Length: 390
Image 1 (spheres, helix red, strand yellow):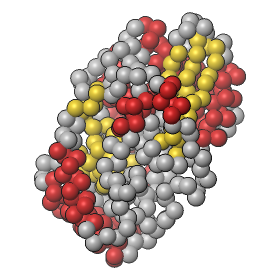
Image 2 (cartoon, rainbow, N blue to C red; image 1 turned 90 degrees about the horizontal axis):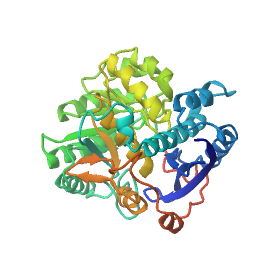
Image 3 (cartoon, rainbow, N blue to C red; image 1 turned 120 degrees about the horizontal axis):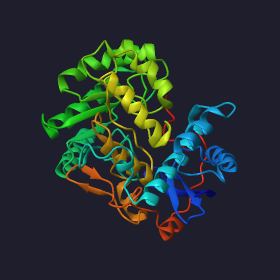
């Protein structure tokens, strides 16, 4: 079997109306195609160009040689690494696993060593939407904000989810007393609403500097937070480890780290309790298996990041089915209806657990009619992104 062509497909991502999901379909001379995803928010043009450049090499290659192709795309390129190149490799890698699973008639998790669990516990993100779609909740300063969050959190728990994530600290790196009071008030309201048996993750999203976050953590500790995500900027492993040792709250990070080599520096500090590699951005299924195995040597668990589209979610579930040290899989509830609409065989989400569709490869494909229904959105980098306040 040989690769004949690489097709890039884009679809509007409805959780962020100006953002797109970007998929790759790898074609072969056997008539088998594989799907991958590399959705890299607001970087469609760069990612498409990198994939199309890689396609010049990939045509004529054996799609079963996944490890050889991964290594070639990573090691035999000039100026390798970084978000664009690794996301392109991730998308291609995912498509190759899908092809191999389909050709051999088995789900991808079987190729990866088989199941270690029958279903994957999910944690809810994107559950706070007011007016228009938003991943970060209402930010209008309304007096009923705490009640709104509390009521929304109870609705999520009623659907069966035992863990949810909240973003209570927005704005610039240096926090104010008003922002501390607002953020702690929101987390308290959610904790009181859902009770002591539900996990609450707090995502700072690297919005605060160490001084600011050190003011927040003593106030969060009594609220029994499951983890504190990206409490400071993510690109200094020493600083992250030093901060992690300063609090009793488990620290999680890693959504903007790429490949096992970047995670190594973090793991060697023996401070972070949860890592969050993204299957679309850290090297695909192949690389996340290796990152998970390396983390296991340090007794670190995974909660894979997933703010992407449906193929990312399904591939993440196949990964989670096959590794022993996963905690929970991220799921954006406000994207889920669009996942189910575009997939020919939908995800199985029941009582807060996820299972990939049954069948070889990923077990599903993309519905061409639905893709045509949601053409990609136009956007302006920076101006269209929902993170203007730093």
